[in-house]
Length: 239
Image (cartoon, rainbow, N blue to C red):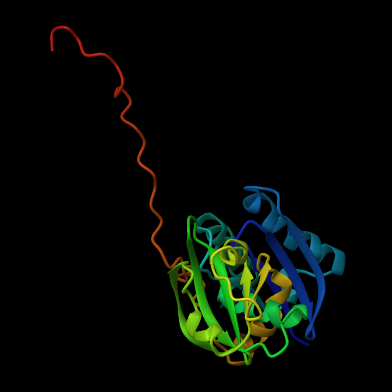
């Protein structure tokens, strides 16, 4: 009986789930802003307490590895590492876009004749972190930042219906307009949709190095430079 702790913190939605024998038995979610650091470990503890389990009773912890929010990913990965170190169990990681592709399949929202799933994470302005998946959940276009234009994904839309899913799907719907071909599902990735890819990783024994694993940010974090402290002070008459 495989039992996993699943953690997803790559977007505004903070979520965690507990699975047992191929089924989700508990799930916690919150959209409270900037609360990932305070809620993620609590969600895990609450789920385990409710099930009468300890972290060491689980077979692995799986975390969403990005792309996504720099801070959110750091919180999720740090929490997962702490759990793995403390209980001596393996660390697994799955891509945020892989989770969204699985979420699309599980949602029942796929349009008839759908050819491709395009998961997308908001990267601010008119940009998204995205990839393209076939209906077998195999990735057919590499993960990359995409500046959204009316010609984005035209190659795939020419072949048939495409479902765009993720927290950037809403803004994409106002740019990519192909009636009868482009369908949109505006949502965040959820820990409960991590079970299938996590199980695949576990069975293939693709464990991460708990000490050195880092999230997949896709872009380097850049801190905004502050203004010089005395920038707007009047000059001395002696200068």
